[in-house]
Image (spheres, rainbow, N blue to C red):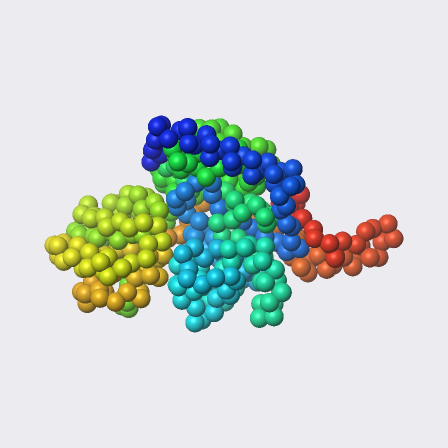
Length: 389
């Protein structure tokens, strides 16, 4: 059921109240303009959450990339969590996980023709992307994990909410997993409930819709996870999931929320042994020994299944047994909209980008110059808002 993975530490609630007061003060400073949110003259879409842990940001950003890349020049800007570099880095064919982080590396590998950059300072990152001579005529910037980075004002704010950890039932850190009060959801233009079970009934959707208590200007969507064929990370042939029947699976993950992946794989095999590390885990020599030993202890036939994100770090590990290397497969994840909502979502996104692309802005600026009563705003920062479209 929804919210089934939420755990509240009631003894820590007093600390949550203190933490909440600090976060509310910060948000108030942005709301009244003491802390400034900067608008840019280019369409920007932010994808993020207000919880600790995975809500499916990467597959949702990848969905947007696939939706937009054939008609627009797309750039993805991320913080590059746990990378070893500093400042602004624009990914190229020689970039490594250490340079840009695992998730940006994954996206650059899957979509080599788009621009992928990392910068902890998102405003500086946007400036660099829009002024870098090697990155020309970007039509839209996707801000990865930037819902709480309020120094940038995106045109569309997408908030992701894990079905199994619905924010309406959660508490603030450290008692719960919320990074800011529930009222933070009011900044979202689009709210997506992610990782929904495929068997949800109409009544379930209605209950969640009412419980989320969104404003009329906010659009609510539901997505579920689908999987492509297993892909060997050290070379070989893909495998369909239905070939896993009867095999012993070592589920190797270093992500925040592997529970849904575990549940989904149970449809194909009852023999799953989890080997879990922390989110964005940097694998060590001891971890390599642990992986080798865990796989050796499984009875044949056996296979190792991992995530695409983990695969970016496992590919460069030394010391893995040869049998382990030939048995590791990444499970590609993609999202699917439920309730036949995909067309409406796609039209909302592409319509916003098309209306606010640079070409449209230039045409509008020329028309404004022809009108004596108009005020040309081409040289001023302008707020490109989804709500006004």
